[in-house]
Image (cartoon, rainbow, N blue to C red):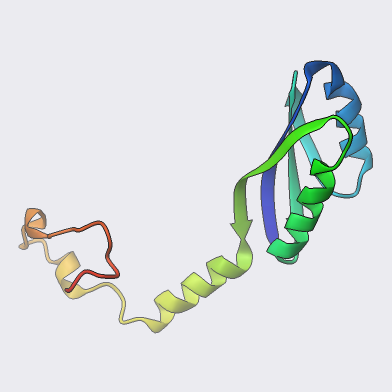
Length: 115
């Protein structure tokens, strides 16, 4: 299951009308609005379903833009948890308080770092 927040931008004079359109649609859940901005969430079984809903919202009359701001994917979280469960765990030297953390050479990419 995926859940994403979406900011929908409209001209201020179209805000109230579009809030009604979004509330009446089965595409999203309405949360709040301010003049020219409407916050909704969309859900889908996967990202493709969410993108399809987003495109429908973008196509509504008077929508200037509709963009995902935050996305949560239950499947991705489960995959990362599986990776952690299958790994050797935290390297013992990371929990060794006698080691000077200042000696760790971090190059900005742990995947390429030789430990």
